[in-house]
Length: 251
Image (cartoon, rainbow, N blue to C red; front, side, top):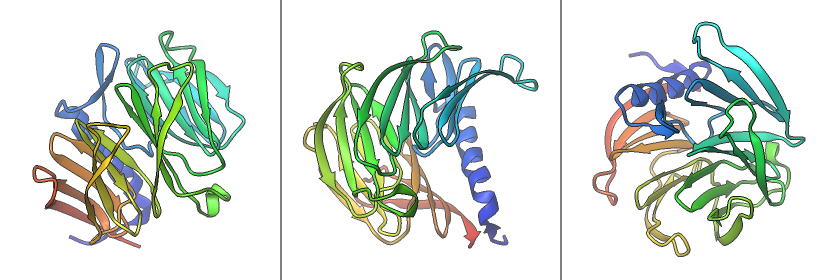
């Protein structure tokens, strides 16, 4: 099979997320199952609505008729927007200056609940239960950021609180599954943490034999994007990832 060019990598990662949705392993918002994406996703679906982020805004579309989506509204955020992640009736939007939480109980009109602010840095975010996990990364497009993993208590969504920060090397995407937290470190591989106590994360293992930029964990299978391709790994044994498949990428 010939290598796949970088122009196709985003499409393939979206396809991987779609396939997960088709087999039923998915994140849901409200009663409908909608799919599972990575922490660097720039759109998500909740029931009959598509939420997409662009450079500085959140856009809402109705997809009641999938082949004829209807634009509903644009919400300006006045900062550089990086990612979007769903949890329950809320959206967690990662920006270069903080995490913005929206309530979508009224799906056509997302309401800003709160903002967790930090210094300028790239900001993917995932959330589960009463905690959100945010990576802050320095880099050309992220101004003078730091390299950290922040754990945030979102028990009170209108008043998120920083619990603890962990020093990282080059954190990119991240994902959660049960008591596990996966954090990609770009050229420095993948870290797997035990998050049984989110206030005291325990590093299980640091895999350094491949690059990793984003990750979708689900039911003991990881989908990872890296410089060399798109990988599927089994993490039944958290100390020994087993390669299941790879789609090579030509840089």
